[in-house]
Length: 280
Image 1: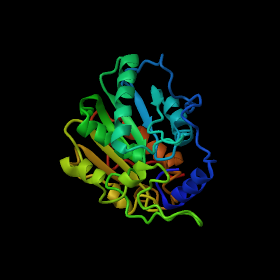
Image 2: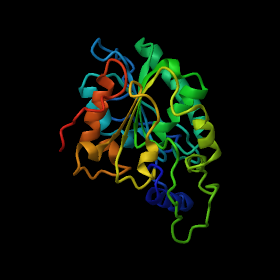
Image 3: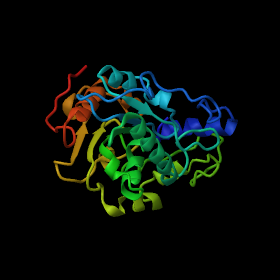
Image 4: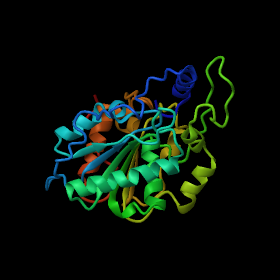
């Protein structure tokens, strides 16, 4: 699961037991439904291919099992990747190293589709890591918009509690999860990431958050500072007060699906702050 106390506890226990139920890198990678059709050519209506970037501990198949086919049904060319594998667990490598894996994937998508730019949609770490790619690896010119679903943009202040019987591991060394340490509020990585500001020139940014986030806390630490023409921060309960989706399942929220599609459908800039999805 993504970086949350509950998920990390579960992951720690299963890693230490040698039975973590995450697809190993050696296995044939399974794409989510609708993704990675390398013959797909973007249409005039949807000219930018969409790349889905999963969160910590997540495979692309699990993280995007509902959003990928939703976007495909809307006519988008959808792509997804796994990244940052350590000890058979995805998205646990140092975030800066994972960003170096995103870069060639973007290039592959651009080459296959003929698109000059892509749209990135990421969950948790996957909504934050592309900012390193754009800000430090020269990726900004290749990205039209980044849509972050519960992104760990400024780290989390959450207390990560090891499971009963596990050795206290404040640096996450036993887990082999450098990404977990990187996503702590105030970490050296977070200081580097945000040293250049929350945004870079060029891309637009849409952030989608939930007040029930128990992982990246406080939830509004996910928000980005920037002018309205470039940045839109959305709390889903401001749109649909009864929406109870939390961090891990937020990519499966039908309300979030609508907001993502709206953001991707804008011709320029991020999602419109006034956009109202249908509350389900």
